[in-house]
Structures are given as structure tokens and as C-alpha cells.
Image (tube, rainbow, N blue to C red; front, side, top):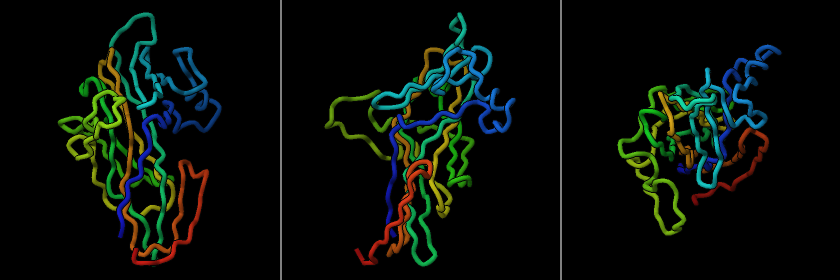
Length: 233
């Protein structure tokens, strides 16, 4: 068997509009598209109820989530929303055995984990949920990989040990389609707080002596099958 890690950058995030899973008719579509902060089109601002809103900014080193008061005041706001990361997924097949997912990694940082943090992590294989942690606990020393904020020093070496990354072990599940990691971000009386997600990754285990590899990129828009010569290498 072989082990490989597949990562995506934090700024590849896709936001889920509140109400999107229920959008199946004219009324429910309008509800999902409703935006009370008068900024629409990109989906980068999510209405959380009342004058609470979440803004997502994609920057060079991360996606940054900021909870803010969309009204005329600057009050503390609470709410939650989902965001998604499509993980490049190479599925290896050998004698009826398939690639399995083993671990989930998240490299992120928040200004205050009590006010703004990840609350749940889910993993989807196509339309099949294969992992759900609805009681997410942040690492005691943080999950910033040992680099706070960002750095322009290319010689800085991140710390990838589990103590400085969010590392979650999975019940091994065989993979059939493309993998997506879904994160629930929750704010509790947040004001002047933000959370940055730098990278999200999944560790896969491939069966030994791989015969066929199917590569599924992102949202299944690209599928490639490659015959691989069986060898001991």
C-alpha cells in the first residue's frame, strides 16, 4: 500500500448560501438568494439573520472570514455557515480494492476561538457523507502550522505535527467519486474577529500494485483513467 496527502489552498473555498440545500422551487430559490446587505452576485457575503453577515475574502495566503454588522451600527453578531473545499481525488483500483480516506488536516487560524471557530467537519464522497465530526475541538496550541499570520520568508519551515494542525482520524472508507471537505464556521458574539483557512488536506491510502487510477478533479468536471504498470516500485 502507499500513503499520499492531497491538499488544496484555503483561497479555493466555496461558500454555501444559507438555505441552499432546500432550494428546489421558485420560493425556496428566492429565499436562498436573499441578501440583506445589498451586496450580491458573487456569494462572498452570507446573510446570517438580522443584521449579522459573514464576508469571505480570498487573499494570497488564505480565505478570510469576517463576521460583521451589516446595519448602521457595529454590534456583536452570531451565526454559522458552511463552506466547502474540493479535494483532488485519485482513486486507485486493484483486485476489487479501492483507495480509502484515512485522515483530515486543516491549517487555519482565528483571532479568538471562543468567538469565531470551526464547529463541525464533514467529508463527502460524491453525494455520500463518509465522515462527520459535529464536536470539533481546536488543537490546544493552534492549527496555524507554526506560522502565525503570513510570512514572505521562504525559508520558514511549517510545523506539520498534529499539535500545530487540526488532525482528525477517519474511519477508513473506500472512495468512489470526488471528495469534498465541508466546514461549519460559527460565530458567537463576534466583533472585530476573523478566521483564516490556509489549507485543507486529506490523507489517502492506495491498495498495493495499483492497476487502474481514476483521477477526479474538484467537482467531477475532469475525470481521467490511467493504466499503471504493476510493479514492485
